[in-house]
Length: 242
Image 1: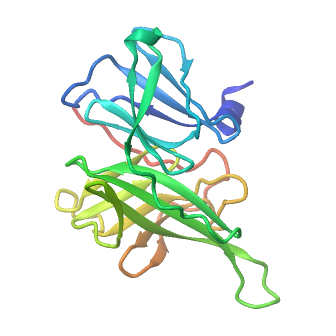
Image 2: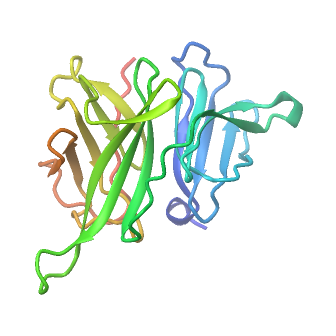
């Protein structure tokens, strides 16, 4: 299987360990397989090869912060991952937060979860809801999307439309939180997203990028990017400057 087919059918995202974290440890990578497989895989600079890790509910998204990989399952459980010295170096998970409130309901609505960590370590989950809408009986249905944010407040999840002076980026390659004080060109209280869902949740937005205002509940296109092919999925470019 070629690299393009593997990216389309085998895995969804690769998350790299953060070398600037307080306790970086050995360099490692976490691979999130597609919904057909569900389980994650890990590779370290010391070990070399990929090793599958047990996950009963599957991993939908993951980030790396505070020296650990953190993930959210398809059922809404948030976990932290570490290598188990007694299990031959296999990565094992432990649930670190209560299960996210069930967002399922209307079968016509597709749900997608992104895990985000703020610079202060506060955990947030961005819920993307995608559904078909028609303006009249003669128009073909169009799939549109909206977003909600759940913040971990103590031991409970709380929905909020106020994320302060921050902008959240979610997409196929990474999920991150940016300060709008340090980057005034960004819009506070907004979610920047890429149209990258494949299959039934794919949006009819020319495969571009958009920005969603949590306060207004409205989405706008990010202009200047032009039209994008359906493959490869549009991804955020995050420069790394020493």
